[in-house]
Image 1 (cartoon, rainbow, N blue to C red):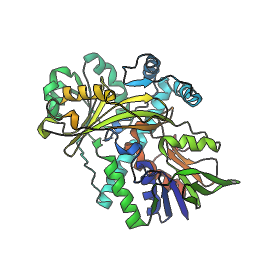
Image 2 (cartoon, rainbow, N blue to C red):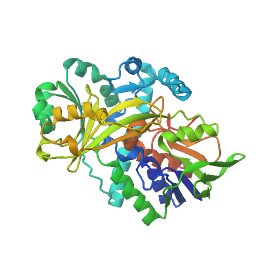
Image 3 (tube, rainbow, N blue to C red):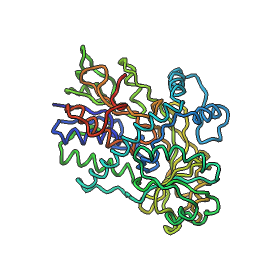
Length: 416
């Protein structure tokens, strides 16, 4: 059986690895010249079941509406005529109830916990290293009010299987000495000990190489997907810039472009791009940097320690498929980074990047068969694609093989 996977980001590459491990003849089509050059190139670096809370919530509804006119928030909405964004927004708003927040977060947590185990199993089985650190992640708050109100979602995740520790200021600094300089500015936080960090680009590059060299997967880089050749209930071939690629099944894992391709063929796939910004900076003094990943929940800045580098990440900007950026887009990120870790880095040495997260209105990825008998989806992972990619890839491989998935499929199998 020949399977064609569209996209060589972390999601597509993980799916290709598991499918090739099952003995299928796998071909991966990627428009960039190498794997992990789109959304997976430079995320926050967090493998974070602790960040499994869905975006859509009663609180997010208020923030979303404020973002229409206040562009200083971590969430930015650029108003323009975009019927697709309007349709996506209406679906997002319907998810902003407490009931939907809880239901969507449970599904995300289930997949995130499973996927973390899958990442670690792949690393153990293949020997892949990716500047990983398995020390946990700290989610901290600057005021007592934000700490009191902000821990509700974490406590809910804890009720459904996430180990956490609610920590005060002293315990937080004990866990992360790198924050000692701002001790008085932090009220406390949540420590998720099973969370971890790592460089997704390194992971994908090495996993793609392993899948090609050890499992026989074929990667067609610099090749653009132009459409699908469909006859009846089946996809006969993928039409590409290098010609048609025939196969027995096709998997769409094209990140934010997945929705564009899907709706051309009548697939209900409301994936919308949400821009995020990252800076990767060599540490001038490693003793002044963090020892684990973290998130400043009040400033909406996430960070991770990747070897001798610091990764900073921020912002959720709704601006279509615009991937451009300017230095001022990183100003708030650098202010917070220097506040948290003074003397640790020189921002002039930062590698700047902006990419698009493939967001579903409910924050839950779509996995499984879609409309045509041999067409599958594995996409829409949003801001935690690095966290959930390997779990969704293994889950998809089980569906393709007709095996019972290792986790409860409720809420995960595509039903559009």
